[in-house]
Length: 332
Image (cartoon, rainbow, N blue to C red; front, side):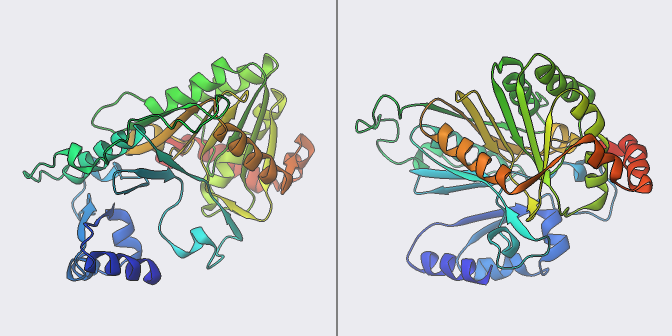
C-alpha cells in the first residue's frame, strides 16, 4: 500500500488529478483515522463512502463493493481486486490469493466514468462534474487493426440499493438459462437464494456442464460452512464442485459456451445482489473469452474436486453448523 501511495503522490506532484474513494467499513477496520487527511496533504482528492456511524441505520448495510480504476478516460479496470497486500500476494494470510480483473478500453469506459462520479457525489456534494470532460478523444472509434475473430462487445453494468433492479443476479441467471454446453463459475462465497439455486441446478439437470470453484482456505469461516452446506444439492444435480487448494479465491467469474463471460465485484450472496453497490463487465465474443476460460481451466487444475463422499467425510459438527447457519444467509 505504501508503494501505491508513493506512486499516487508522484503523479499528483506532476499535475495529474487523482480521486481516491474507498468504503467506510474498510476505513473503520484497517486504516488510521487521519488517512483521508494524509491523502489530501499529498494532493489527492478523497472520499470515504458511507462512514460507519455509531447510530444504527439501515444505510450502514449499503457498502460500496465496486472496484473501478479509470486512467485518462482511455482505459478502465474492474474485477475483484482491492488495494491490499494480500491481493498481490505480498502477504499470505489465507494461502495463495487468486483474483481476476479486466482492462477495458473503448466506449465502455464512459460507463465506468459515470458510475464512479455517481458514487463520488452520492454524499450530497453540490459540485457537479461534467463526465464528458473525463473521456479521451476518439474513445468510440473502432480498433481497425482487430481481426473479425478478435472483435467482441463489452457492456459494463452495476447495481445499487437505491435503484433496486437486481441486475447482477439477473446477469448470472441469464447466463445460466441461455447456456447450451457449459457454465464455469468462480466465486469466493456461495450463499445461494432459492432463485439462484434453482437456476444453477436446472442448468445442470438439462445437460449443461456446470462447474463451480470456491476457496479451500476461507477468509471467513461462517460463509465457508454455509457454502459447503449446499454441496449435496449441487452434486446431486450433476454440478462439479472444486476447492482451490493453494488458498483463497476472490475472483467473481462466469464464462459460458465460448460466447459470453462476466467479471466483476458481484459475489454469489444476498449482500452483493441486494444490498451493496456493485459493478461488472459483460463480454460477448472476442478473444477475451478464451483468455477467461483458459484462466478458469488453469485454476481448476490447481483445485481439488469435491465428491459427495468428500462432503460426508467433513465433520458432523461442521456440516450441521453449515445447515443451521443457512438461515442467516441474508446477513452474510
